[in-house]
Image (cartoon, rainbow, N blue to C red; front, side, top):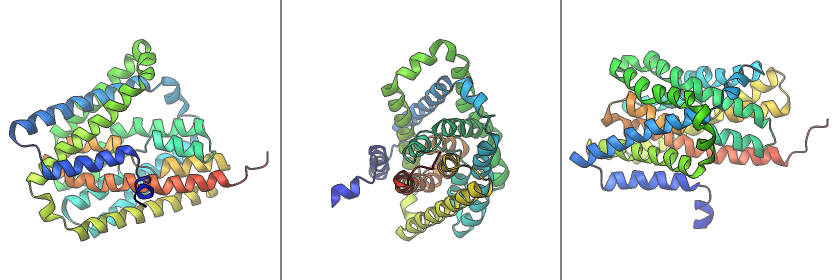
Length: 319
């Protein structure tokens, strides 16, 4: 029974939960907090540098083809999701409400969107383009949406925008410009990429949650609040899955492209959300803001894994 329950969680999710537990018991303080924060910043810079080096210009150019599908994915990601977020975030207050809205402003995932599309026998090439294009735009669009929809709460400043440019955008562009020389080597270093990708996220989560715990996170957030946030995440995912399913039918997409719309359009990227939250929000807020992002990440993996298996079991469309 325990093994079956744990099988629902990928190893990274278990590491993420362990990091939250460690930050709750032994939060970094003083000099240690400064060292952890600096390491997290370095990890984020390296992460986006490597992402830039990995993304081919062919993938960027391909984002302009099959425009109806890609436009639909982007519309769901950056328009429909935020509209739901504006409504659902009103259920909560304070940083938790900000976290729910912030979740809806993030770009789509790359790895899981492509993986679930492949399992469901969808258009994998289109999924690669849509997910990559969403992440590329998200570096600019997400901070702009945060500034527009959340700036009134005092979470965004010129320093935050400068941090986004220097910590995320500049390394990404630098990595992409160096791709002709280092791209092939970076692509081959799968183990290194995984360590940097996941390690930087774990460092940011430990730093952010540690700061939040020091500021009294678990005294301000009850188990009931946590359960309510999880319920809101479930409702949000259900709404978006329904919208992507209906939009695919409305646009007359074939089955393979409709699968891409559903999986790329319904995802939100933890890998993008963690570093962005670290530079867009005050240190004491980041841990609370990231709670909805981490909960939604696990919920979307479980739900979409089941949906992908259902699609895979269906007979292929006649050609």
